[in-house]
Image 1: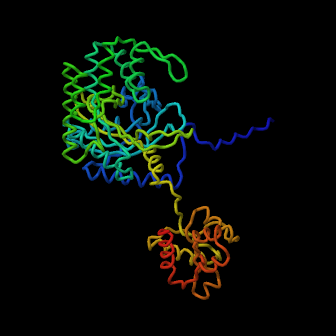
Image 2: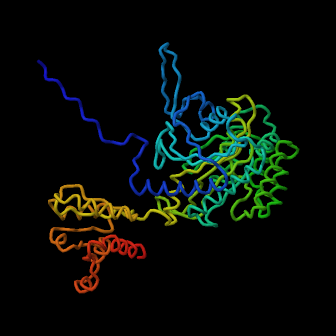
Image 3: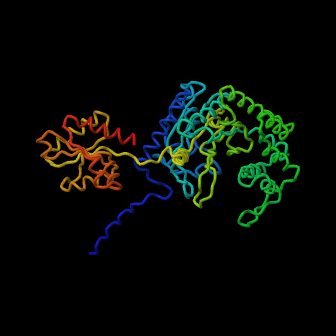
Length: 497
């Protein structure tokens, strides 16, 4: 009889495009999200936690840059007893679920409805450096009002959020534009109903930050050589058609009134373009009334955020401080948040126009920015470790831990093999524990405990002479009743240092 083969062991490897998050990373993210939620709550927004799974039909065509509904998502088909299969998918973002929730519960929700949501989203895309298939988003949206006050409020809230989490004024800028102004420019260009040409123009405009005015002019025309020497075909527009685009992209002036004057020149007689400029003026006036100057929020026509998705104002938060890339070159950190007005998303469900505007913060990018600024990224402090000298006295050690925890001090009893005391201290070191508590039989008989300052002990071991070590001991013997008081004193001194 043939010997049955053993099933191969599964590989302990993270799936491609995903990653695991440990201790300090999770803690930092949780703390930052708590701060952001505090700002959103202060602005009157309510929390919403929607399902992580939506029907592919609900996600619909609003998946960015894809033609098929289930392209770019993790989707599967569920069959009932009659073999009728519905396609389901992990949510791609937090906006499409909001549209479904609002359409489903609109009779029970206040109007306008102001909500914020935080959580993971999943995208079935090719992963790359720093690009994962699962990542966190943090959104806030107002559904049910066409007032520009809602858009201005979102921009102000984004500014407040960045400052609250630790990005100081001067290190960020919220930039605002309007899809309608761009539509006006396209109208003046005379592209008519040629949607493919319009899309090509929009994609080219989106490269303005990288290739500049001359590069955009070449790409809208015959084409250009890129940095590698490869020739990129242009859109093929005439000089007369190109000119309104260049006028639009270069309309930003030092004075906001001059910017609006330049924009009016770019959109010419287009009524939709004039409407977009009027909306930007309203937003500017509202922000100025709230004390938000151009050092925090500014009108910038070069902002082109997936314009096909948006129907009015669009905004983007850019961090302006410099960092060094992997090749040691200086560059600005870049965008960490964006959003805008999307008045057609809920209409897919209700058949009626429902205005909406909102923002989305890239949580991982914002955390990376805070680490660059030194606001996060320090070593996490572990728990106080109560060592075990006699396994038969585990109740005594559990009593100590209970006292520490009841006093608000993070603590744990060592639960490994207590035979080797050195291993217990190695464990405490691996946990980055600040303090170890020791009570052997002798200490128990005398009614005392030994308390070891592990942080100070490590510093002394690295730098101090024997004489200095004697003058500044890192281990203390105190009466058992003073355990909590002494631990608290040591933790306070470590915090000050």
